[in-house]
Image 1 (cartoon, each protein chain N blue to C red):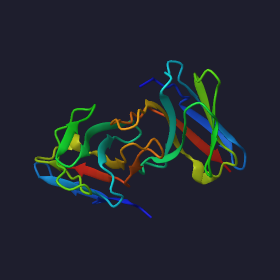
Image 2 (cartoon, rainbow over the protein chains, first blue to last red):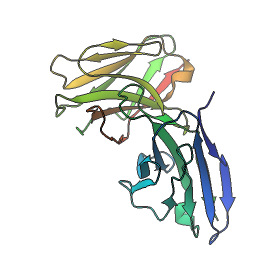
Image 3 (cartoon, chains in turn purple, cyan):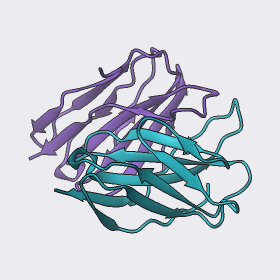
Image 4 (cartoon, rainbow over the protein chains, first blue to last red):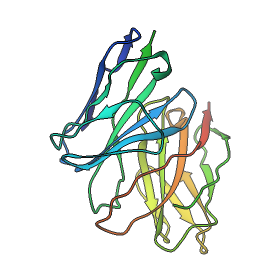
Length: 114
Length: 113
């Protein structure tokens, strides 16, 4: 049973459209993360948040933006989608002060921009 | 965080033990070894972690060498559903601090019937 939810699971959208990928978790975790992964390639951290009203850019530069207004919700937005944004986007969360278990990941959103 | 080196791919027969090695020769004293796996582009799944002692849970065992420069993840009886990319990650943890996980290329384990 998933405790972190991503919607939509798959999205095909035209160039120039604005899109928001949703990520919600019910575990009360204060830390949340977005990773981007192209097929067969490594996961790259693009955004993270250590709590409400806290967001940081990750190791891989991304044109997307994120917000963290509520603990359980960490949406990712692309203002104007381009074919280069085609990828899988994975959301994760973790607790503070817990070495155990590390991250819990969602099932991902596979985005295709045509 | 220390760098890790893993083989690109490995094969294992169904029902046999799968032993996945990881080299982390620059690991420092406060760094943990974590293992995750990713099945067919789903979100990665936590498997096990350890600091210096060997660890076992319902999924796997983790053997860390005495000098901590390498470790082995053991799946005792591999099944076809264990086919996945396995990531070995080393990172520091000092209670109360923030941390990020960096994933490398991992090892693609293929379990054959």
